[in-house]
Amino acid sequence: MEESSPRMTGGTREAPVNISPAVAAHAEGEEIEVLESTDVLPVAPEEVQWKSLFDKYDPKNSGFISTERFRDLLATHGSELDPHKLEVLLALADGNADGKICYQDFVNLMSNKRSNSFRRAILQGSRQLKGCSLRDEVGLGLPQRLVRHVAYETLPREVDRKWYFDSYTYCPPPWLILAITIAEVAVFMYYGIQLDRLVLQVSSPSFLKSPLPYHPQLRAQAWRYFSYVFMHTGIEHLSLNMAMQLLVGVPLEMVHGALRIGLVYVCGVLAGSLAVSVTDMTAPVVGSSGGVYALVSAHLANVVMNWSGMKCQFKLFRMAMALVCMSVEFGRAVWLRFYPPAFPPCPNPSFVAHLGGVAVGLTLGVVVLQNYEQRLQEQSLFWIFFCVYTLFVLCAVFWNIFAYSLLDVRIPPAP
Image: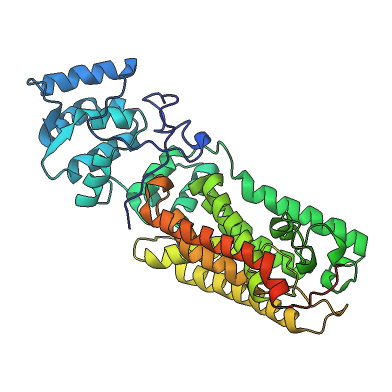
């Protein structure tokens, strides 16, 4: 797995030296700037004193000083640095096999950049930062404890957990998953009042008359391949999906950002409805299981692949509970699909959307979550899975256009 590090602001604004490394970083979303050691960044006024100190330790003006000299410099003047920046600099010193520190690496760090040389140094050297682990830090407020908890829930390396803890600012907050969940609850309550039914709403003849569910007779209405996530068969269906969506989706969004998590979620939603249209051609689709299963399966796969590095508490119990919830929800969907429909000839909603979400999570989703800092466009594996996913979407679109007539499929009448 490629080494990962936190998201960056792309140099749009500089953080002061005496605060966390990325005060404004998280608000900028997914943009990361990966620099080589030879890339030159402008030196902020606060860094002039450090440049003069480096010049004293580098009389030949080579741009490098020895690890021993660098440690002496930090021991003398390190109190002026943010503690986490100091720890990362020490980790960089430990990881350099040639025993030298590049001044530009220091400038990159002070400007909220993590260079390729830093990534290589961590790969070659110790992955553990010096000093106490993040879990042992004391005097943290409730927001900081929550961020620390999320870091241990989602990231497998201490160096990245500390960096994330130091960078996260709750700006922007994890709004995407919360907004989707609120919308799903609002739509459910609206139709619950309209249908006068909260349990097994799908048994109402008017359930599928909404413009939101996917129905094979109305498959030309493209928005239905996405909008079906806001309709649920009943409160039991909504509750299970909402629980998994919030417990897994919100922490993932806090670490990876709305753009990446939204990509995995939407791809899972679209794959779910298209998979139903190809394999279960007469069935409608409702529920957010496609997107939820994409997130949960990607997270579980990431935990398994990095089992030794994941330090979350009761991780085996948590995985077991997630699998139980997924199995219960999937079993309910399978039972409902083959249960005698309340309004024949239209069958009950399909369960195949769950499988489409799992397929997306185990492929595209795993790549997104493994490299939480590195830009996706720089990853060959991401493009391989993205191209495969695009090919599947194109094939499914052509299938929906031609296969129904060629196979003479008897589609139930529109609701």
